Amino acid sequence: MKKRFSLSRVMHNERLMMLVSLLLAILIWSLVVFGPSNTQEHVISGVPISVTLNDYANQTLNLRVVSGANATATVKVRGLRSVVSRLSASDITITADTGNVIKEGTYTLPLRVVSNGDYTIQSVVGPDGNNDTVTITCDAWREAFFPVTVQMPNLKVADTKNYQIGTPIVSNSVLKDGFITLAGPRTDINRVDAVTAVISDEAELTESGVYTAKLEARDQAGVLIESVSFVNAEDGTVSVTVPVLVYREVTLSPTVLNAPEGYANASSLVTVSPSKIELWGVPSEIDDYVAAVQEQLTVDFDHLNATNLKREINLTATESIRPVNGEEKVSLNVNIYNVISKTFEVTISNKNFVAQGVTSGYKVVAKQTKLSVTLCGPAYALNAVKTSDIRAVANVTQGATGLQTVYVRVEVPGKTTVWPCYEDGKNGVEMLVSVDNE
Image (cartoon, rainbow, N blue to C red; front, side, top):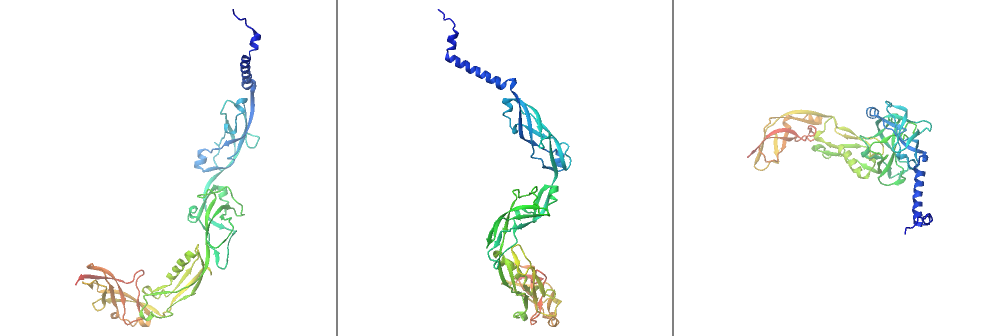
């Protein structure tokens, strides 16, 4: 026998009622969320505005946006609550129309908004809060070169009697020929008066050190210009070596080379004034500096004549050496008076040609009959020299045979205050000889 349908039985079926309740809840929720009466407006603020210059402005004119490039806008959208409630600034695309940007200046540009989903754009308001526009300023981008000075107000030496801060040295990695390259808007680059590297560290120094300095570009009034950048130092810093100089007193001693016999033991033949110099310098470099000065105090009679009996050596400051008295001169005097020069044409023979150092089993014969020789000395002594008094001495140590050009040194036996003067860079006179087996 069939059971009759009973509404009461259905209503009291708990499982069935739970399923029906769930389905009704889903249906009602769907109607609330997706129904046509659920459309609403939503305001999204802080939407980035994309400002891209056209190719002519960017590439041909080298323009850059120097103001307004980071502006944002407020957008009102309309759509289903389920859609618009999830929108954020990153979901909206706003671009500025830069088609009319063709030179430097300030422009008010219309904004374009693109919907990226199932909603409509109701309005867009630019940064001024009233219009659907954005205002930008464009300027030509340029580069310029400036020297860099170093400021280190908080670095001092521990003992001013024995230490001194030398000239700071900016790292070569950011410099080109001693200058740093600045990049930025033409208007701001033209305002730059000076570039400084500022060391903020505080210390009392007894030795050289390397510090990090912040680069600053300022105008004539000292106002910081923040819109420029530093090429090869994009982080705005640079390494600076701060040398610490020590005091040194140096006694100068001239060196005499190839002096003729008559001056070999003369105590005051060469004098230097001042005989002592005072320096501030980096310890590791003072010796090299002094050696370079001493080298200039060398008197080589092979190249001494009436024109260079006196000379001056400039003591110049370097990045690591600083003369105490500033830029000063050292005078060197060769105390021989009334010096003259005279050229002799000497006829070469076995009597006035001597070969020394010849390898055993070989002989050297002069193949040149005339030799031009320049002698120097006091007038009274040089005027007493005859051509026949002059001889040529060759040092030939090689074992090769045949014709050879050698350098011969000139001697004037018995004339102890006369000396030969050779060409610069040479220590003898060229002469043709023949080297043969005996």
